[in-house]
Length: 254
Image (cartoon, helix red, strand yellow):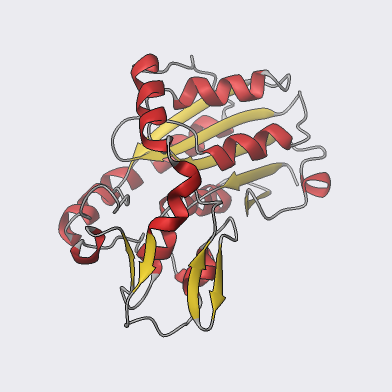
């Protein structure tokens, strides 16, 4: 296999992008970044792509950690597509630094603005607005494919790096306790979808009810994919609109 795409996705935006790349790049396959055999897949790859959402203007911790542990070829062409709602902040430079520390070069990175999903802090978009934003995002996919095929090299720039760093620290200062904020109401039927979509395996069913551990990335997949809207975080999320990417099925996330 010449082209490997490694993705992380909570509510499907980054998975949609990864699947598009898989379909339009020759001899390529997309894998969840936490669920693949790196020895078999990365050996001899010509291109390696990282597709993930921007969290708090930064690279998600689990993505940083996993890339840092990969055995990467120094000769491959590395690129990234980052989905985001607000702004990318320091994400490009962070990813570049992670790869540089491994002797690799990030040649190309593209940010694609998509509907936000962080229900902990804000309400989801109304369906028509989300659809419009997705349509605009999808108009950029072919440009990304052409750039990867031509091995495009761009300057890696971040915006508001210091502000981005402070913003990230502000929102993640209590990360160790994030799992404690989740709860379920009496609409929960114990279907286990929340457990299935949790990439970090941070949810267990105890007596048919989900229980969260302390290894939480706040991807909010559990809240967004719950078919019964039974999961809440704190007191504000119960009445907020949910969002999952309409092109992605929950079975693909599981």
